[in-house]
Length: 312
Image (cartoon, rainbow, N blue to C red):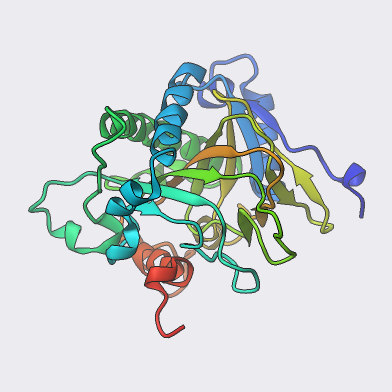
């Protein structure tokens, strides 16, 4: 099967999808159903998160990644039992058939009171905030709050579009295990081989991924026939894809699709928000044995983060 026989990845107005009174609401729902149920990817524009806001967040990550390695190492997540802070090149291996990914990352999650019992769980671990660049924590925390609110609304609308009860799912995102990440992809290293990737072929682990980028190409989506389709979006538009957990939870009504970043001549920054439910949400489909969300997510983290890999 060739790429030309594949349906195009939909580009949808979030404003139209979220507003039942919008003139283009029905068309947006149809496109959303195609993206979620058949392709596993779509892009959205007309969102509450402006291009200027996204550029501010990308600039904050860029300033951090430009710091000397010795300074970034003060916030190295390899010293923790969680995924909070900086991940050096080679700190993740999303595909066991490939080498560890050559990108750098910076991860943060929901901020809870220090005495909250949930902070004992790795998925709710305290965030690590560097001294530099100035305003880094404030910029990311504000974006995290607004991005998770938008992701929740978007997820509900997408679930409704494919025939699920979006409200049922919404009630399971009160203290989400959402992870905000900055990815820094340098130019593809000299001497990189067939097993080297910015991020190797994988499917995301959780529910919905809200991906902002600096506009530099790099992301590739594997289509049903096996071909790879490049996909990018400028700041202010977002790439949306879905994870293994949501595919399980919806009994396959929404699909998780493999994707990768091979890397090229230009460096690239992307900012995914991995929107995941409360730790105790049962993400098994109706009638199946329960699957606590934290069990699925932590198992995948333990396989991926090199410092959490056990017995390997």
